[in-house]
Each structure stands twice: as structure tokens, then as C-alpha cells.
Length: 403
Image (tube, rainbow, N blue to C red):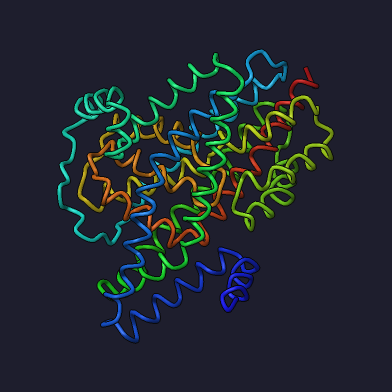
């Protein structure tokens, strides 16, 4: 009974505000009482452990369910929209790789060099990639082999598409259940961030803050460039007229709400209403908007690429051109499997990090850093993702009407 008012207060308070409070409290504790950070550091360790536990299951169930429950043969005329989703996500990953190469970020990681063996080049990366793809699925889940998990999820999803309705429904229910667990874990992010920030700042001080600020500038800069330059170019290629009125409409009416909800899935009703006001075809946007909330993840591709390359730069791993191209493709594929909940893309960073031989423990520290800067990063990412769903749907519909 005593805890009920506290629980109600937490439910009424946004997660963004709670993380901000945890961030400020962690910095204050590190500056005022650095000797106490060892005790609260356990909260950060516990949070990272929870992320490590839920991430493999999330990727496996989410991807398998999405593929298994896709209805083949449904006349939706969304193939052009899917192509725009793919092109936009891949272009965003390329922008992120170029920006990370021009302005590399250095992170503060604990025991980062332990067990890290940089790959010798693209041949070794591809060989390791092939072995990870054919890994035993149980071993992949236990070891956190995200490439193997992704491969098995795709294969199982394709197989179950031909199964009974009850089997597909079971996977849909599993997907909803895992998503609920992810929401619970992410609700603990304020405590995790509090412990992580307190420990990090006690050890590294303002050096860590500078590193996070630089990383955040690169991330948000890439997202703004994609939203204001790349996406308008893609839209112009479809409608052959000034794309910016449509771009700004989508950013204003979809991006702003997505910035605060921090969930592409939660912003689907807003996008559906916007698509209706734009006069788009209902048989198209009723499918493309919910689908885009799952697979159209340009912001997620940027987050995955930038943070993976920041980890590689921190560890002194040289990334050649061929590996960078492979990272673009992998980031785009990973982004399509990003969860529609707040912070979902961060849980796919270990998959990209595995290309460089970065162990799971280090990769999860990078994920935790993502949550620290996620107050701004995840909001901007979701705003880009969700507004682009409507933008590309509108562009494809206008192009079809014009033809």
C-alpha cells in the first residue's frame, strides 16, 4: 500500500524524464561522493545483464514472428514503398559510416581490450560470418551469436509461414510477450543509467562527458542530414517536384509526436491519421504504415553503424572499405529487425559489433552508453523512423497517381 503512490507517480512520469533524472543523479553522486559509486555500480551491472539476457530472445522471436505472419498474395501495391524503405535505410547506414570515418568517436569502456581479437580483413570477416550463420541455434542463443540468431529466425519464419494458423498465432503471441518483457527491462533504464553514469564519471570524469557529447553530435547530425537531404532526394526521385513541403509536413505532424513517444509502434495511429489527411490510398497505407514501424528504420541503421564504429575506433580496430560496405548492409538488415519500442535498436548493436570480433561484454557496454545518450538519441531516431514511414508511403502513392 505504501509503494502504490510511488508506482503511480512512476507511471505518470515519462521514461525520458526518469532517465534524465538518473543521468543527473549519477553525475552528482560521482562528483560529490565518488567513494559511494562502487555500491550503486551494481545497478548498472544488473541492467547490462538484463539486456544481455533479453536481447538474443528478442531478435529471434521478433524476426521469426514478423516473417511467419506476413500474408502472401495480399494486394496492397506496397512493393515500391518497400523499395523506398530499403533504399532509405541503406542510404542512412552509408551516411553513418561516412560520418563516423570523418569524425570518429572514442568511448570510455571498462576492460575493453580483454579478449578482443581484431579481424585481419574482409576475408576473415566473411569466413567468421559464414561460420556464425550456420551455428547451432541453441548455442547461438546461449553465446549471444546474433548473426546466427538472425539466420535461424529468418529460416524458421519462412518455414512457419506455411504452417497452421494456430502456430503463426502462437509466434505472434510470443512476440507480444517478449516485447512486454523488453518494456519492463527498459523501464529499469533510469536505475541502470544511474549506476552506469555514477561509475563511469567517478572513473573518467569529464572525459566521459566529452566522449558522449561528440558521439551524440555525430548521431543526431547524421539523422538530420538524412531527414533534410537524403530523404528529400529520394522523394524527389518519385514525385519530380519540390519535396520539402511534404517532408516538413511529415516531420511536423508525425516526427514531433514520435520524438516524445519514442516508439514507432506507438506512433502508428498518428501516421494513419496523417496518411488519411494527405488523401493517400487506404489499401496501401493501412499496410505500409504498420509494416514501416517494423522494417523502415533509417534512424536505427544510423545508431547501429555509429555506435559499432565508435566501439571499433575505441579498441583500435582498423575498418577497411570492404568491411565498411558490409557493415552498411548488416546495419540495414539489423535495423529492419529493430523492436518498435523505445531503445529497441540499441539491442541490435552487438550484431554489428560481432563483425569486428568485439566480444559481447564490450558490446553490451556500448549498448549501455546508448541508453545514457538515449534521452536525445532515441527520440531523434524514432522521429526519423516514424516520419519516414508516412513520407515514403505518400511519395509512392503520389508517384503512382501521377503515372
